[in-house]
Amino acid sequence: MDEKKQKGLIDRIPNAGWLFLSFLAAILLWYLLSINEKTGRSFPFVPSILKAVQTVVDRGILAEDFISSMISVVLGFAFGFVTAVPAAFLMAWYRPVQYIVEPWIQFIRNIPPLAYVPLVVISAGVGRKPQVIVIWLATFLIMTVTIYQGVRNVDETLIKAARVLGAKDKDLFVKVIFPATTPFILTAVRLGVSVALTTLIAAESTGATAGMGMRIRSFSNSFEVAPMLLYIILIGIIGITSEKIIKMLERRLTGWQEKREI
Amino acid sequence: MAGETRDIKLKIDHVEKIYEGRTGKMIALNGVDLDIMENEFICVVGPSGCGKSTLLNIIAGLLDATSGAVYLDGKKIDGTGTERGVVFQQYALFPWLTVLKNVMFGLKLKGMPDDEAKEIAMKYIKMVQLEDFVNSYPKELSGGMKQRVAIARAYAVQPEVLLMDEPFGALDAQTRTQLQAELVRTWQEEKKTCFFITHDVEEAIILANRVIVMSARPGRIKTIVDIDLPYPRTQDLKMEKQFLDLKAHIWGEVYKEYLEVRK
Image (tube, rainbow over all chains, first blue to last red; front, side, top):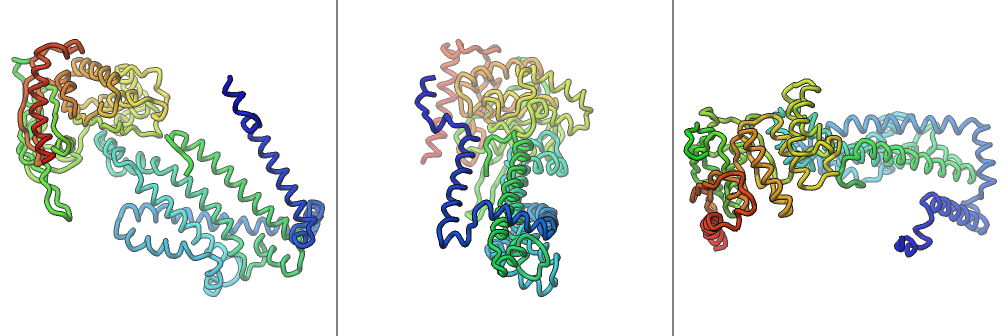
């Protein structure tokens, strides 16, 4: 109990309290930015944002942009995931595949997607197709690398233990390698979703007809600052919400791990 | 148990293991011959790198011998088989499975229905006194408890031979002593042939019918010491002259090999 006294104020405020304080501080900083003459142009304060909500809802573009972007993200991510899993296992299984493919992945992974979007548009045309392809590519790369690490990290003694208990190759895959890799797969999903959202803006930069990223660009062209800031905040909210959901999933599915947080 | 006529359970017939790496050949085992009797408890001691683990892995079927062979009941072994159970030093429990599911793992692989597998698993979980932890995950257990689960898991598939690779090596002295006593008790109850690797000469004398001393690389059998002490061998025994003589003798043999490695 004595120890508790020594902990002082910092430890006595609950996490929710800190979160609230953090939120208040952000609003205050925002307010200060909004009243400064120069930064005020970029950061209109809350009332203007609320008015912007009204505007984009009235124009009917908010729902349209949100749905359009989510379709691209979900499709791109889904393709990324279903291709990354077998690719990662192939790389871990057959070393020649790893030797040949891994350098490509590392190389392309270091190119910002924004750079190659126009290239994709030239081949795939305008519309949703290039967006899905770009998100697919970006999420595929990050998820392949992560899952591959997981497969490589499977403890060899576990495989030996399973074999002496009578496991055949198929059993090894289903009952040992797959569950042992689950934490990495979930981490890959978390990183993949995050990359999908960050890539979205780049993916919608050329030839898109709707979408959060495309709209930000068009607001920028017409100097509509408040709706632009609104959209940016919305993207942040979508990102943090999806991350929280996946983290919850990770806790439920991989709570058996000795140590976590990758 | 001495004096009984028993069958040869495991015949290790001139087993050789040569690793060929980029830096050249490394002879891990240089022609090992050993007959292990039915229900016999064999302990293998020797300096690090003498090939003890290699030999165990070959008997388990996890490694292939370069030449020579291992016979179980006169039949040449090829690959792993559930008649040979293994307990590893690093426990090797599946961290995503509960204690019960870990012990059931091998039984389920045999295609046994759930309730039957559960019944057998519970029997061995009780044997290692972990019935209060059936639904715990390995991360919630101490090292000693983990190794008990691993022993129960190995027993559950009812192997005829139990291969143990320094199973108590990572445990504290007290837990080790306790598990040694438990192991001897279960061995007497369940009648299995045991092949047990250890660094600890005292442990070998407490457990074994025969202690095999292996020589430094390339690994060979150097001496075989019969331990004619009645079971169960208590801790008090460690103070007695007979025990101390055996210990001095075996330790002397191992130490010579240890010096050999350092040269």
